[in-house]
Image: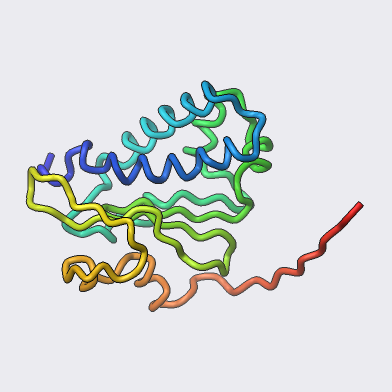
Length: 178
């Protein structure tokens, strides 16, 4: 396997994605700390195994669709598998997680969108480093001032430039008070 594609290089990205999803389980409740820990470890292991031959730090957009975690009218099977390991059904996961979620786990960047027309937000960002050295992390979601980060177009920006693949949906919101 190529040095850049070593399994360990995707760990910060996977940790960011799994931590993001786990916060929903904690916040919406009915899941104890032990279950959240088990969900975390299970999903980390599942994603690492799933992505090991689809991780290309030298071409971060390559395989982006394969690494995309999607929850809409269908639960992402990898998230469903981790949920089932802690005794949650797919229906329970739908109640705990956003009903429309797209989570991109790419080399050097993890970002998400809630809702079909929501804004894309960056959870984790780092810049490529030389082979064998750790990547430099950035918590900034805007321009970092670093030409390595600012000069590339992210997979999500590329998607936005190329246009939507599905028509926009109009949502009507109704609130009910008791």
